[in-house]
View 1 (cartoon, rainbow, N blue to C red):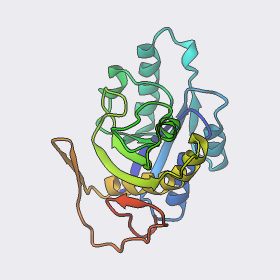
View 2 (cartoon, rainbow, N blue to C red):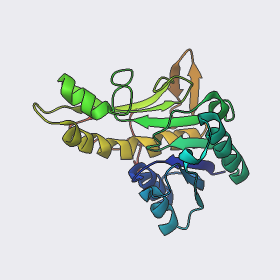
View 3 (spheres, rainbow, N blue to C red):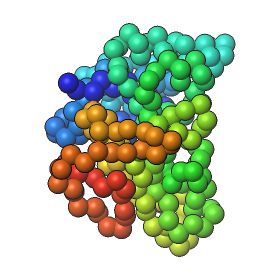
Length: 223
């Protein structure tokens, strides 16, 4: 049975698009039940409309508190029948009202956590002068960018490049590892013990990795 997703976006929704693309080409066994944004003008909502996906905008500024906004999101997501909440560039800190409402919430972050948490991971890594950065798909808990890591992609940092340039190269890997992580979840192959995430081997062919870069666990065919 396909994994039922509620995807939350705040902006352009390029990771949403990568998920849609992998569903449509048959690599990802999932169904998007709802695309929700806290910004009515988010382009991610337009992407949803183009693909005939149900969507809703809840302007967070119209609510008296973070908890009230989160409660409104919980109501919408519960009504759509989603199994899992997927944060795809959703730029809001979630309260316990939201986090305690769902068994599984996942997020993607444009840095190698636990380094460079927060909303400017690419810029912070570039400004610091690290030699390797990347992207992380992780489970969400009540601490920002803190939950157990499912998969990471490493991307070499070029000397002198700024956060925008680095972010563009990281984004290419985001678009590969996020749908892959969701497919592992769809197949029931992911377990967590003491913060360590284990992905059971399904014996599938591993896809070649576009160099430079390293993905761990390795991607499989179709990603």
